[in-house]
Length: 358
Image (tube, rainbow, N blue to C red; front, side):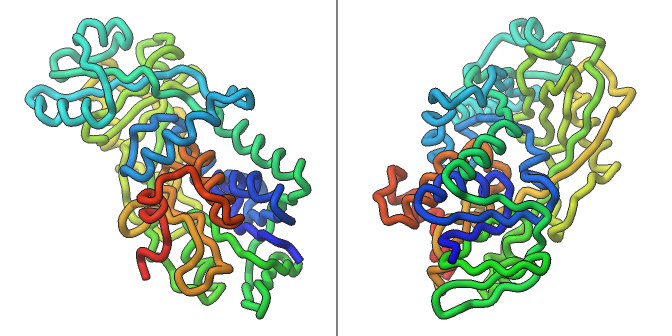
């Protein structure tokens, strides 16, 4: 019998597998042909530990040691520049306090990013600690670590039936039957669908679409050293990507769980908001895509055993913060399951506990 059967091979599921594999027989079932196919594969890929709800911020800061460890190499310098329109002094001040960002002169900002529109921008701040995450390398590192401890990772495995047994669970996927003591639901936007299959009360998780557009480097500039640009209200953001620039409308449109695609009008509106802050007009879009970021009703992650069935364990609702918080989340999963005392504060664990919705 499998000790830990994980449904979902996004960053939440595969990182948990790496930490559980030393504790017992661990198997990951991913419906798609590759790990991290959906939200994990469409992330902005930034480590900005001050971003998110208080519990998420704690998890991200707790993940810092992993990213800086000898197993590292997952991060590279980027920085984040926060832009405020004229007349937004109070909102700008709150943003600086929230992100621990340092205000800077507009002239300095233009030296870093020459396309900034000085007629539209009232205030600028910079946070040097925002860093790019090599997301593919991170996913593969966790998968390799899982396998090295005897774990198994199976792709193209669509779960069609889940049955509760007296001593665990029976899961059917592609004609194969898997029997496990503990079932972990890390199915991303599909977490509630998996719960329903298992006869578990769903969380009422909400998948929210987030779109991206890749545009050519504005004005032919070398954008490789530019920071991520973020409107203080998060109405758009941009980030260098392989010689081009990706721009997101930063929308949060509720969607059913599916293989998301972008809406052309949403992309156009986001690019228009971006263009208000820059001098270079967007004349061509190279590519567009979208992913679903799943949120719980209170927008905190959901980590822990189900309120009614402790052999059903939630690793859910990462809300776009999965990569930057996954080292701490994965360790917390292993600690809660093994009975080890977590290093995460009790208040944070309570904020993540699925039983808060019972």
